[in-house]
Length: 333
Image 1 (cartoon, rainbow, N blue to C red):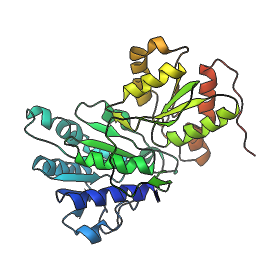
Image 2: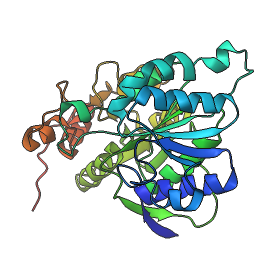
Image 3: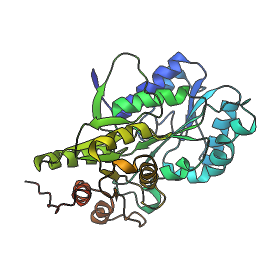
């Protein structure tokens, strides 16, 4: 399999879908001439031209509304927001129109809209540009929410999102764009709503998504050295959520630690823990633990930003709490 970055995998997914289906097009701020704020649309304007790779004015409400209108008449728009933070200016379009029009039309209208947006902290972009807003969208019936952690998942899930007849909020993490991974040369898709066990284990289930998957995997390696076997479940799709995979993992490990870069209050982790209390309570041998970002506006100072975001050590500490053991301090040579 070819090695490529997360950014290249997304680019390849859009390129393949635009070649396959002439109704697919890309629209957003600086996606054409500048090739995207994170260079995800590199080369697409040259191949598909300005009618299918469209630069827009700086108006998120207009961008989202244009995408929704295009989807209503049979096209398959990919709407790129420069950052998830800017979707706040388009929430009326996304919540009151994209999410509801299929239902309100009795199924007469399809809204095959894919909205791509980077999010997350770690780049010292300050409080207004470092947010994780997945729980805002998970809360809304009619929207699907996807959050891939690897290049392989990013490509397969984006292709499925583009082909879906419902609006999909496709979340990317700014710190994942340069991450490399194996991506098959042949055509493949990953169905929405399927979690993935990134690492098998027997003592504790660590549930995560987006950049927290790599944090959890590093924590699992450190835990293994202490004789603790951690299973890593990558949600991949936050809505619809694959509860079967979570329950099956808990049947084996009997303990759960939820790791997310969002806040604890009304976050994805709160939903996971509530669902497992409802669906898998009898399999639990200890209280579930949650690891999340500190509930403060994200600091700009690098040391404070690092302290606010979940770390490998904070995951290890949570695992030790649910195992009712004394924690140990992770050290690096």
